Amino acid sequence: MFSNAEIGIDLGTANILIYSKNKGIILNEPSVVAIDINTKQVVAVGQEAKEMIGKTPRNIVPIRPLRDGVIADYDITAQMLKAFLKKVAKQLGMSMRKPNVVVCTPTGSTTVERRAIHNAVTSYGAKNVHLIEEPVAAAIGADLPVDEPIANVIVDIGGGTAEIGIISLGGVVSSSSVRVGGDKFDDEIIQFIRKKYNVLIGERTAENVKIEIGYAHENHEEEFMDVRGRDMVTGLPKTVSISSKEVYKAIRESLEQILQAIRVTLENCPPELSGDIVDHGIVITGGGSLLKGMQEWLAEELQVPVHIAPNPLESVAIGTGKAIKMISKLEKAAK
Image (tube, rainbow, N blue to C red; front, side, top):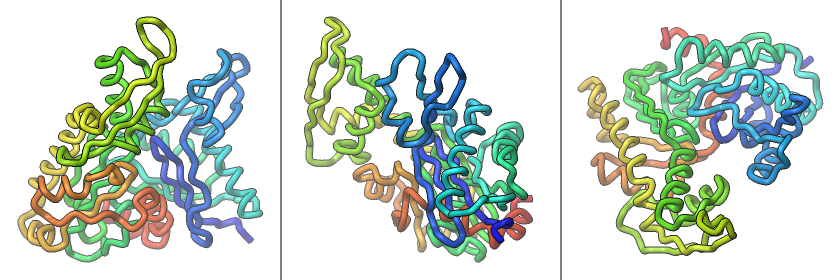
């Protein structure tokens, strides 16, 4: 009965989302795998593995097999996908024999990287695997009229990459991708606190700092937060107070890189479509779009309206699921 199940997969650097045609988002878990390095066995995947980061014994290593939007470790990604797809099959109460799968890939991914994604999904036993570009999936998920002859500008700021695409008639007219996203912001916060306060903090703490007091706009009311880490001089635990202005300074360079990529994409847009952008503006999606002040800052810099997608964290996954119906059209447009 379910031999032709249809699912969409958003292979994100930070989270993996799986969308089913009938049930919507059926899985949303961090793309982390905990491996026992002695036996090479997978100990945990997803949320369970993320909670182990920075707290495991020597033989267990939490790994993020997807870096900058592409597969960094093929075998572990395949194992992680199998574990997630098993979970999904259990949830749907069926053996998902030979599902039709749509997976999104970053705009700048090479043929080798695309083949790695294709093979990782095929190894689970998928019947057909279709790859679509991330900006197209994000635009479909954000309910933009992608198959109409108007400019749909989507900026998807994910964990590993920021993807910018101008889509018209179901295809990408102009696009660019920078390997800057939520992970880079976290990394820069870690480096800043290390340099300024001589305190080393972990990835999860950096992420909390970004969510609580991270701002994309310089003009904001200053906020403070106590951050715990390890003093690099004494080696003992230490608490320091960080301000939102300092966090802004730490991530400013990465924000500028994203802005520059958007500008380059808009510069390469045909003049006929540029008029649409002034009317309809830009839609931002992905976890990075939730950074405080992001919408106002981009609108100010680009002088066009900026809107946030209805479900910024799920847009790409919803788009991959919806793309199943229009896949042949999209694949023709991609050629």
